[in-house]
Image (cartoon, rainbow, N blue to C red; front, side, top):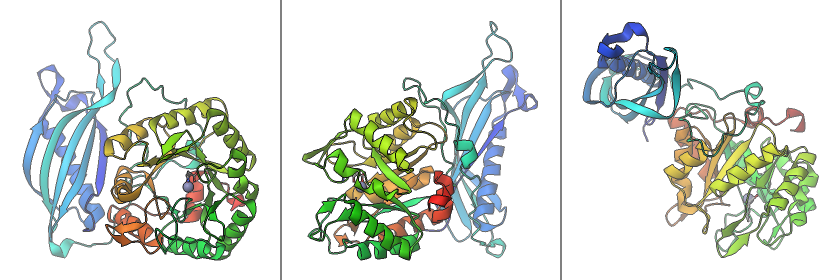
Length: 445
Ligand code: KMH
Ligand code: ZN
């Protein structure tokens, strides 16, 4: 993929009274095209280190009126990168408007639950070869909220409210890549590249770190390859990983289907930096992965007692709402980290609509990631990265690099996700930066 393809920039401006040109405080369409021009210029600066020139609009559609006082969000994305030309697609959305009701105060205004698209356009810009500085200047426009901003969790959004059009994490924000290197279900019969011993897990964790992962989602296996939640085996694996690399270790409390809750809690005795909290029961292939409401609460308490940060594994939309119930009950606090685990046979299948809806249900300030199973892993990883989320890849969820081609461990899958992220200008964070973003006390590292 060409560098810059998919690079996205968004501006949000208030349209002033001086912009009103026609009756009814209507604003000239050229004002919106001016915003697209600014968006295009920023895209070119980020890609080429030069402001470039707008050559032509191929299509412009004005779809709704814009009036003084409106807040307009203008987004542009690079859709094609030629030698000197950069094709772009633009969309402007109204997100706030004055009410203009004679029965109400003239200052009454509404923030829309759903934005109104006011204009769409396609255009081409040019940056002459000799002006392309190519400084690899695909820099983030905004960073995600620091711990001081996410520390205060707002009331969970009521479920009946249509989701406001808010990008929880800006698309150019830092990216946390998680590698799920072993899991509980994949066997050596499925792939010879599965790590099993503590040393193999440590070697694979280090390879994934080198490829761009800052978090290792960890299961362990008995010597015969069967899944285990033994404190001793986790302790040994963690010690070996620590000898080799500084990744955040996120231990599973899901274990394998059929394990008792007490058995699943084995790794918490190692006081991991992170631990999974599975937020509901699902059909799991032909099995049932049982997480009753009392189980979830018991595990949440034990994660907190271990001083670990919970990663909220949500296999269905309702699991998000269950996590928010735990927040209300005081069992979970900010910062919240959601992992949308999609494509488990018997549970919700991955799609853009599903990801957008799940994202719409999490509170502002929470982070989110997608872990998709099997052939969905690559497209859903790319979607999450494009939408500003985080992502999990690895053999636990998918053993293939391409159809029929086994991935030689999880590191190639991490490397591919990292390359895609870099092409969009997303910064891949190292474990220490990830600790800050995830609110993990560095003293525990
Ligand atoms: N092995 C699955 C049944 C987790 O790690 O917390 C559960 C799982 C989730 O892998
Ligand atoms: Zn797992």
